[in-house]
Amino acid sequence: MRDALKEKVDEIEAEQMRKVYKKERDQLKDEIIQAFLPRAFIRRSATFAAIAPKQGLILVNASSPKRAEDLLSTLREVIGSLPVRPLTVKVSPSATMTDWVKTQKAADNFFVLDECELRDTHEDGGIVRCKRQDLTGDEIQLHLSTGKVVTQLSLAWQDKLSFVLDDKLVVKRLKFEDLLQDQAEQDGGDEALGQLDASFTLMMLTFGEFLPELFEALGGEEIPQGI
Image (cartoon, rainbow, N blue to C red; front, side, top):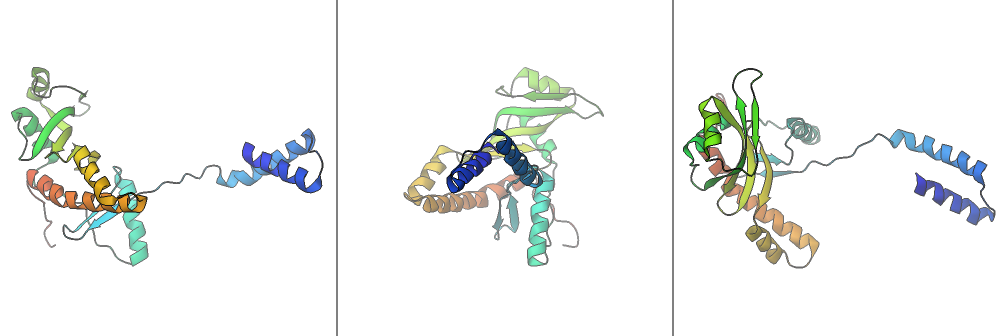
């Protein structure tokens, strides 16, 4: 608003070759406030998505189910029809993650890192959040032995990426390792557009390997009857 007021004052003083004094400045300020009010509470956000035809997936960069559904609803409005469903697996992610931490061994190509969330299965049960902690230690095992289950777990896949998986099958805080980022920079050349294209291509190729292995590690995809 300050910038808009200064711009208006400078414009008047330049065009009319006169000084704008306090009373007129205050009046201009009120007019600018009234003009800004309709836009004052507008919040803009962007949600990105990618289509993986080979896997039959739409990947949405949003950890909130509502934001993902909002994006899919917009796609439906644009193309007229979009028969999609949330992906489910045969074994609950929580059961699998709990087993990985208990046995101290994850599925092939997956590695347990140093962060997790444990929840008591009883209603209003306790929650334990651990960061930068050895998840093979006695303290974590004691929590599991008393009935708590893992509802979030930080993992690595091969030497390519790290992420946090939750009990709703949401992949959060996904980070590609330096090796992949360096490869994208090398493939993309010096131009920003080339870098973006190389990064996106490498990301989708990596997802093409990573996601099927993740679903298989969780018991395989659950296909609803009638589909």
